[in-house]
Length: 116
Image (cartoon, rainbow, N blue to C red; front, side, top):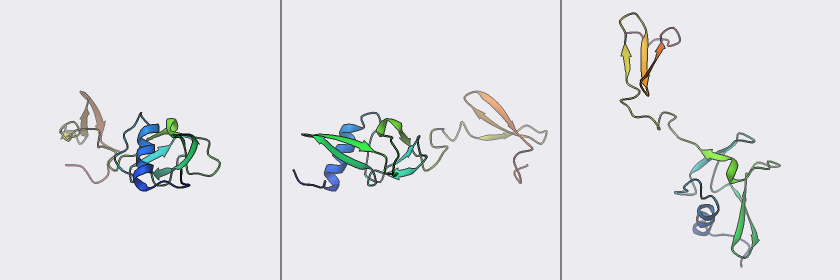
């Protein structure tokens, strides 16, 4: 075995070891819950631990986390919600309400410059 992984091999290792979250490309981002760093698959430390066995480590120096401590980073934090769920409504009393999962949350004083 050679001492480095090609980009395709690297992606294959990420997919094989981190079976909880799908890796679509080496540019996919994860956030470490131990050190709060955001990184891509290109930056992850990959170590061979035996024949066709690998371990993944956070790229932050001295951070002990592995793939079990990482979660997806969404470019758009509202990505998980549909536009209809987040459609604001005006209640007529100067407050803006955002309906989410059937619950209305009043958003009046905290929203600057968004009054109807």
